[in-house]
Structures are given as structure tokens and as C-alpha cells.
Image (cartoon, rainbow, N blue to C red):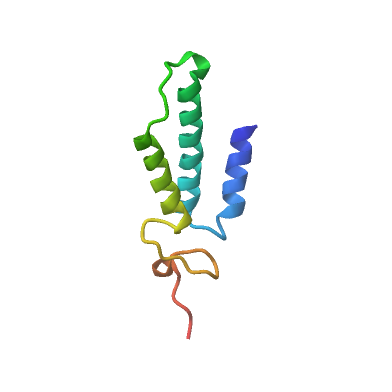
Length: 90
């Protein structure tokens, strides 16, 4: 059921966000979950404390997502990168 929700949320958000931002947000959520699972040793995995380098990696991904993608340029009207927009008819 969670997979269905994730796919539907991505489809609904796609018109207002770029696909790179949606995929980055999904990976960001998985990174947070893996940090918590590793830190507490859930599911019989070896305990791996949260180190500064792991937090920095998560923060860098969050920074990239919050800026709108790797190029940092997002059109505020529709959330898409300007170079990906179709040319306007004259």
C-alpha cells in the first residue's frame, strides 16, 4: 500500500515539480530511514552509529532538493527547469 501511495504522490506532484526533485525526495526519505534503522539496529542489522559524514551527505542531498535540482534553476511558475520548457508559439 505504501508503494501505491508513493507512486500516486509522485504522479500528482510531477506537474509542479521536476522529476529529478521527486526522485531526490524519495532517495532522501530512504536515506533518513536507513540512518534510523542502522542507528538502532532494527531488523537484526548491525548497529552503525550516525556519524558526521553520514549527516553531511544527507544534508547535501536535502540542499540539492531544496534548490530545485543539480543546476539550481527552477522556474517559479511551474517548477520546471527553463531549458526544458517547450518554445512558445508566435
